[in-house]
Every structure is written in C-alpha cells, then in structure tokens.
Length: 327
Image (cartoon, rainbow, N blue to C red):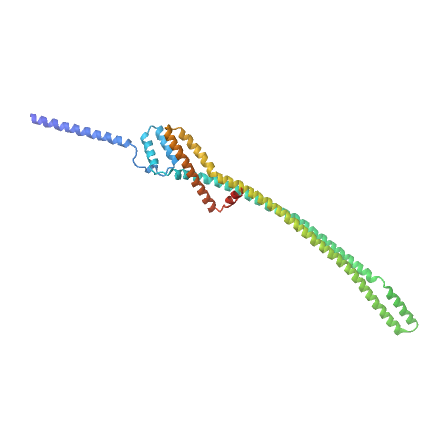
C-alpha cells in the first residue's frame, strides 16, 4: 500500500470516528434537553392557586427546582388571578355550607308548619265537639218545650171557662121556661165566649213557649259566637307561636349565612398561613406576601359575598336579607 493510500485510509477512519463522536454528543445533549422543565404552561392551566402551591412544594421536596421555578413563573405571569382562583376554590364549599344551612331551615320550617297545622286541626276538632254539644242541647231543649206546649195547650182547651158555664146555665133556664129561642141565643153566646177564652189561653201558652225557644236560640248564638272567638284566639296564638319560631330561626339562619363567607375564608386563610410559614423567606418577602395575602383575603371576601347575594336572589331566599335587617 502506498503512502497516499494509507493517508487516505487514516483520514476516512478519523472522519468516521469524528462523526460517531458528534452523533453521540448530540444524543447526550438531546437527553439533557428532555430533562429540562417545560417552557409552556398548558399542563398548569385549570389548577387552583391552592393546587399550584401544592405542586410547587412537591417539586421543591423532590429537588426539582426547575419545575418549581416554572410554576412560580406561571403564577407570577398574570396567568393566575389569585383572588378569582382562590374565590372560585371556596365557592363550591361556600355553596355546600349555605345549602346545608338552607336545608336545615327548610326542614325546621316544614316541621314548624306541620306542628301548627296539627295544632290548628286539634283546636278545631275540640271546638267542633263543643259546637255539636251546644246544638244538641239546644235541640233537646226545644223538643222539650214543644212537648210541654202541647200538654199545656191540651189542658187549657180542656179547662172549663167560667163565663161560658154561667151562660150555659142561663140557657137551660130559658129552655125550662120554654123560651127556646132565647135559650139557643144564650148557648151560642156561651160557645163564643168559650172559644174566645180558649184562644186567649192558647195565645198565652204559645207566647210563653215561643219566648222560651227564642231565648234558647239567643243563648245558642251567644255560645256559638263565644266558641268561635275562643277558636280564633287559640288559632291566632298558635299562628303567633309559629311565626315567632320562624322569625327566630330566620334570624339564626340569616346570621349563619351572612357569616359563612368570612368564617370559611378565615378557616382557609389560617390553613394557607400555616403552609406559608413553613417556607424559608426573607423578612421583606414575608412582608410583601403578608400584604398581598391581606388584599387577596379582602378581595376574595367581596367576591364570595357578591356570589352569595346572587345565589340567594336567584333562589328567592330574600328572608335572609329581611331577617338580617331586623337583627
């Protein structure tokens, strides 16, 4: 083999090694790039602020500082509205809490209404018994009066009339003296006197019992009116107790609902504060975070209260506002 051939062979071998080394180096470089943090934030979208913070802490714990930095950049890059995200994360829990309070109130109202209607039915049933007894007593009394009326009328019709008897005796004397025409006239006069007297007596008897029955009717009407007044009083008292119980429960429920956003926010912020204290931060960073934390809490509370007002209006739960105004 000539010198030029050997040189050409060495060059070919060297180029092959160089290409191989370059290819290997590119492979290693590509491998390192695959370990670098993702430059886009598509995988972070949709997570709440709480979830992002938890993912950040998990990355730090795993010593994946690039990922933690990426999450931090995403959170700081106006891709996350902390107040809106934080409020949204609380909205569902607030909704559940308020719905529970409203269901509790609805159950109380249902039971109170059931109790009132049962009490009203009991009052009316009791008074119906009294009413029926009053009517029966009246009917029995009238029936007794009618029996006594018949007896008295019979007696008065049977009782002799003195003037009639005297005229009848005079008529007999006329007949004994053969004065038959005068006897007939006198007898006719006697019968008329007897009839008039008996009619007068019957009128007295009827007036007596009509007055007794009229008095019984007046007494019955008075008793019924008195009974009705007692029924209305007792029902109104029961209704008053129902309304007072509902009003009191509305005040309690309204207070609980109105306080629900602040109570929930305080609970969640306390939890978030505990997490923040575990992180190593400079005093200036802590001061800034604390200021931002307070502003976020204020803005979040306003969003939650606005959401709550809208929810109550949509569900026609205006009693909450009315009860709150009376507290």
